[in-house]
Amino acid sequence: MKKILILAAAFLVVAPSFSQAQKTKTEKKSAPQKTEAKAPVQTEAKAPTKLEQKSDNQNMVIDNQVQPIREDDTPNSQTTIPATPPQDVNKLFEFKNEAFDFGKIPAGKASKYDLFIKNISKESAELTLVQPGCGCTTPEYEQKKKFAPGETVKVTLGFNGGAPGAGQPFSKSVTVTLNSNLTKVVTFKGETYAVPTESAPANGAIDKLKPKDTKN
Image (tube, rainbow, N blue to C red; front, side, top):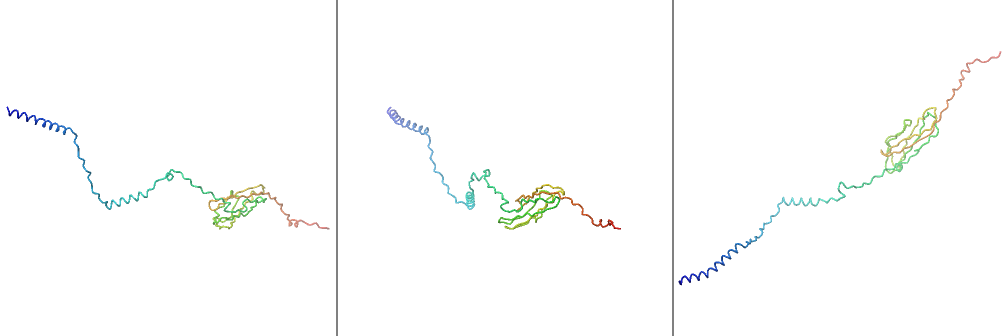
C-alpha cells in the first residue's frame, strides 16, 4: 500500500512536467520557422582584358562623335537659299547705235551700219553670237571674240534694202549674246523710196547716119 502511494505521488509530480513538455513541443511545431539570412556572396572583380578595353574605347569614341540631330538639320526642314540676282547687261556693256535710224534709203539697195559694244566691266568678256531677226539682215563680226575691260568690239549690220522699186518703212531687230548667257536686243529702222527709172540717153551715132541737107 505504501508503494502504491509513493508511485501515485511520483506520477502527480511528473505528469505536469510531461504535459508542459508536450505543449511546448506542439507550439514549436506550429510556430513559423525562421530562415537564417545568408550573407551575399562576394565575387572577386576581374580586371578587364585588352579586348574589352579596346571595345570600351571604341564605344566611347562613337558616343563622343554622335551629335544630337537638331530639328532644323533634318532633311524635311525647309531652308531658304537666297537666289542670285540676274546680271544686268547694261551695267557690264555700253552699246553705241543700239537703236539706229537709216533714214530714207533707195529701195533694193543694200545699206550697212556699225554697232559698237564696249566692255565696262572689270572682267574679260566674250562676243558669243549675233542673231538677226530675219534673212534681210546680215551681221559681220568675229564670233567668240574676247575683249578686255575698256575694249570695244564692232559688229557691222547690213540691210538688203527691201524690194526694189517699192518705197516703204522698215524696222528690224538683232539679238546680241555676250558671255554665253547675257542678251541685248538692238534695233534699226528706216524708210525706202522707189528709185525712178532713168530714160535711155540719146544716141549721137544715129544722128551722124542721117543724111545732111545740101544746098544747090
